[in-house]
Length: 101
Image 1 (tube, rainbow, N blue to C red):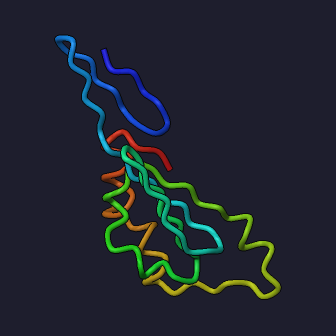
Image 2 (image 1 turned 90 degrees about the vertical axis):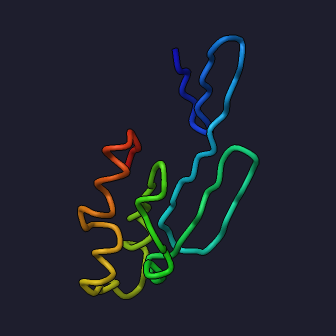
Image 3 (image 1 turned 120 degrees about the vertical axis):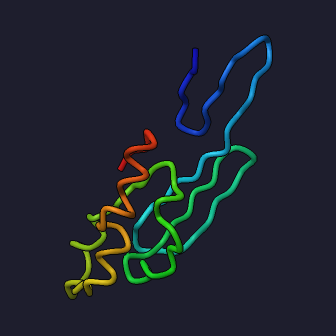
């Protein structure tokens, strides 16, 4: 029976524990990567969405929209920028694979 944790998935079978590596995407107001043995968090700015090569590769997304409201000038997104995250080929595999947005 699988046991779910935020940082990893532990599968127990025949006294053997296998931990699966997890990747998460945080879209916010900065750029950063935090990596451990079992989890990686990629932080990408709303201004740099094009740097996300394949958002479908992530196990979950966190979209921090509050940073957009805090800007002195509103961000105007191009269609290409919006499609990075909001096209069905981007979010579909995340949700169908059991991930969360």
